[in-house]
Length: 230
Ligand SMILES: CC(C)(COP(=O)(O)OP(=O)(O)OC[C@H]1O[C@@H](n2cnc3c(N)ncnc32)[C@H](O)[C@@H]1OP(=O)(O)O)[C@@H](O)C(=O)NCCC(=O)NCCS
Image (cartoon, rainbow, N blue to C red; front, side, top):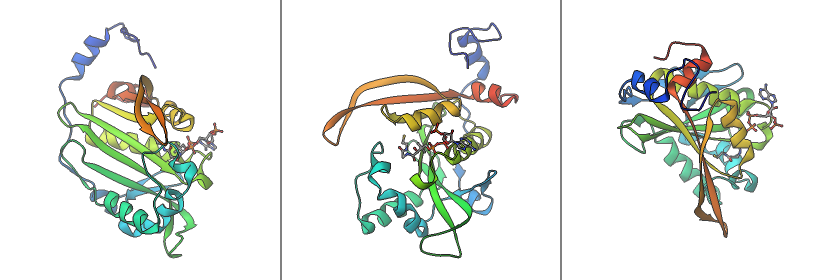
């Protein structure tokens, strides 16, 4: 992906940015629509997280390896279920910090507490970074048993496409613990560029932690997809 001031067309980045026009998020957006009509990928179904997914979520939420680079403390089951209920409450995207979390169901696997339901193997968050400037954020977590199989890339790619197609942000970003190589690789697989490393931004688990910021502009996403940009 070209990331210099001059891109393939020969136009400067400023010219391309100007051509993109002003922020035009399609807000408000009510993600309840995704309960009725989930996103479907080759192997996964993505629909808004529900409080009743708490048992499946706790299966990955309780694993230290999963928490390592997430700003989540260790939680006991009660705390974990309360946390999932809180995250499951996000539906309406209107103002900064509004969010929705999409649960990734894997058809053919059984939920840990209800064999009639497909298991939630991870979740993918969409958050409003800036409604004024049409900037959205993505976040993700997958149960380790299902990592290394391309599920995160498949789900996050579908979420990124959904976000650009439906919500029309100018830019989508992700914030990572800079040591999180798996998450950085996922960002790059999605066509996101490392835009910044913030040194010693947070103090977690007894050490100062750097934050990496990855981002992709709408026109870059559109170029990768070979589509017209809007
Ligand atoms: C970040 C995270 C979601 C990435 O998951 P992941 O499974 O590594 O990501 P992907 O879906 O892109 O899978 C990539 C791996 O699957 C392999 N793979 C296997 N089949 C594949 C397929 N069909 N398509 C793509 N990749 C495939 C790839 O080769 C790659 O392997 P590698 O890691 O050995 O290079 C996961 O590490 C995680 O949940 N971490 C804990 C929570 C966390 O830190 N979240 C991020 C906070 S910012």
